[in-house]
Image (spheres, rainbow, N blue to C red):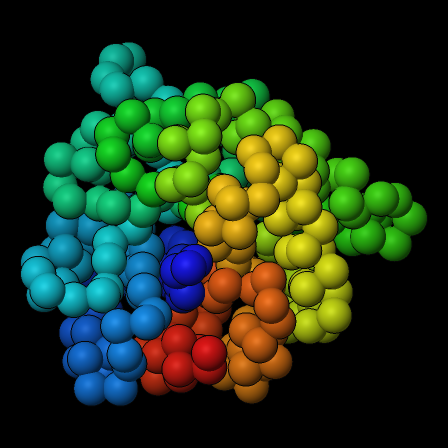
Length: 253
Ligand code: PEP
């Protein structure tokens, strides 16, 4: 059975105090209101990883994630953070290939393949993001665009590594815009991505990969999206900055 995952990408938001209070609220509410069927991942900015981790109970289904990492373990890469550094402080998930990193920091599919390797080599789980921009949705072939991202960044993995990857389908036109994909649009793309994975890795493996939806997901639309057969949760941006909204989204399965 695949995992249901709701991951909160805080992006470049919160200060130290705000990070601690948001985490405490989420941990508290999750303990009271959620069952073990949902995995929550809190993904704060780098400076808050360690303080946030100190608030996560050992026996809990709330995990720590990072927003990015470098592909090398160490070296002269000023301003970068390596996968081994993240693993050494207890990070378990790392977002790779978020559209904001692709757009503002020119990350390429080839670089992302190396980052995915680095994360897996450190025993962590990559949340690999893919998704098409508006012009491709309106005038191009979204399926071809997104499957190319998968092929070039994760299809070099051996089966046992691929089995650990979480995919987040995030249509760029829906991120932070308030414009959500309809559940039909999400289900269509998620099923197509799963089929693409099946063609490369077989049905058994493809049926075990969690594929999350991302893009203006909130408590009001999450039940509809999460009821889709191939949608296994969400990567949540804006709504993850509110503990109430984030936990309500996680209650939507
Ligand atoms: C994201 O940043 O991955 C995201 C989905 O953002 P939002 O939920 O704000 O659209």
